[in-house]
Length: 101
Image 1 (cartoon, rainbow, N blue to C red):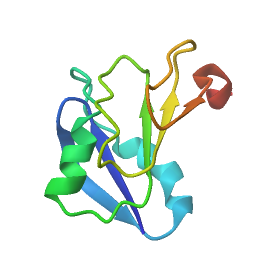
Image 2 (image 1 turned 120 degrees about the horizontal axis):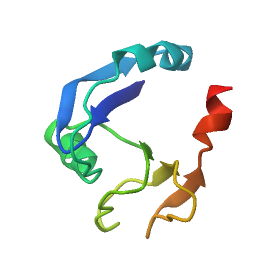
Image 3 (image 1 turned 180 degrees about the vertical axis):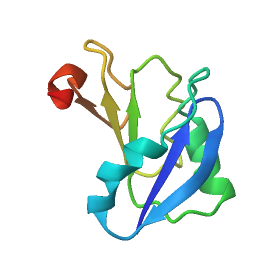
Image 4 (image 1 turned 30 degrees about the horizontal axis):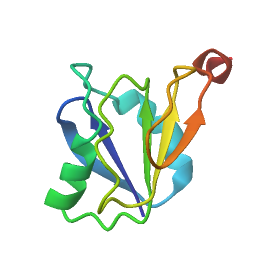
């Protein structure tokens, strides 16, 4: 089971549950939000909704708070801005221009 949440400074819509990772491609059409950015909110949402997260993958431009690692599940930060590195977890850079091609 994969849980997908669109978050800016709050949860935008519902947490979406999918069983087949191939469904991730079509989820882009359901994206919402676009306000201020505070990616630490995802960890509050996981706790509030009691989502059994083994790993969290966050896609962000990197202009966000990261909070601290204590008590958080393993986290992969997929960042679209070169030169920004998360202070904890694993940072992966995503070239958005190349990804769209």
